[in-house]
Every structure is written in structure tokens, then in C-alpha cells.
Image (tube, rainbow, N blue to C red; front, side, top):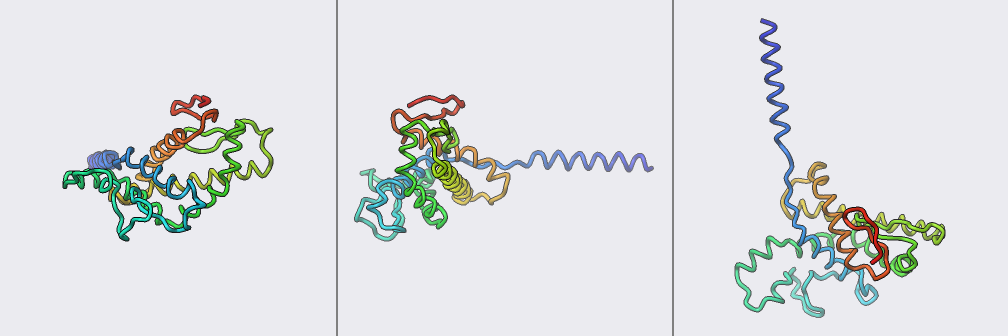
Length: 221
């Protein structure tokens, strides 16, 4: 009797374990939209920051000086024959929603503000090949002899800001795609968010800068 009960209990436990193993998090990662959102954020918050009013963030695609106070998709400005099909495509694109979501986070705005202040010195370090860009979008020291203690601290702070932006993007993706935030879900999109961020930064890098490709190999652009 006891042996039968134990076998039955083991069978039930095995079934439960198998069921748990089948339950996996499957989060849709809109790579193209994420990349466009990163670029929009850089355009709005990182480039020509001196000409922008702090906190006055406009959704991507809204021409300067034109705003009706409502978030608008860039598709409305670029497609002459706009249709309901275009609306559906914009909804699946997510680029505008992601950019607006991140731009509404005070910690992200603070990170970009700090990055703006570090940009002149950081660009000089990239120009001198003292640092390079990793395939996670972070700054890596390549020649420590060219860095002062202040420069090393700058690199550390820059990477903290970049990690915050990537982590915020991962959370925004879950929110926009209506997936409950959890560690497994975040872990699934975080690596892709970092890789896409690195891809965006590689495209924006200058000739002569050292960049790490997705396969781990370092090259000079």
C-alpha cells in the first residue's frame, strides 16, 4: 500500500515539474522599434542639448515648433496617403510609444543630462583610442595610461547611465507589449535591449573609434 502511494506521489510530482517546465516567458521583442526609439531619444535628449529646454521632450517625428499637445506618430508626418492600415502598422511598431515611455521617466532624463555633460570629454577619449565601445553599448578602457583618475571615474559613471537606459528600455518593452514585469521576462529582453543599444551606438560612432562587433571582435571604424 505504501509502495503504491509513493509511486503515485512520485508520478504526480513528476507531472507537476513537467508542467512547470513547459511554462516559459515568451516576450515579443520589437527590435526595429527599439532601435528607432533609442535613436529618437538620442536626437531629443543627447544631441544639441544646449538648444533644448530641459524637460521639454517631444515625441519622435513632431517637427520643431509644431505640437498639439498630443503624442503623434512620425508616420502621420511622412506618409501622404495615411490609412487605417498605416495606423495598425504604427501600433505594431511601438517606436513612438517606447520613446515617449522612456522620456517620461525622471531617472532616464537625469541619465541623459549627465551623459550630455560627459560627452565632450568622452568623445575625446574615444578619439584618442583610450576607450572603445563594447557590444553591450558600454564604454571599455583600452589604454589605461591615457586616462586620469577623473577619466576612469567618468567611464564608470557613463556606464551606469547607459545601463540605466537599457534597463529602462527593457521595462518599457514589457509595459508596451502588456507583459507583466518579472525577473524571467526582464532577463529575456534585457540582453536584446543591450545589443540593440550597442548597434545604435556603433552606427553613431565616429571613424577611428574602436568598436566591438556582436561576435566579440574589436575593430577600428
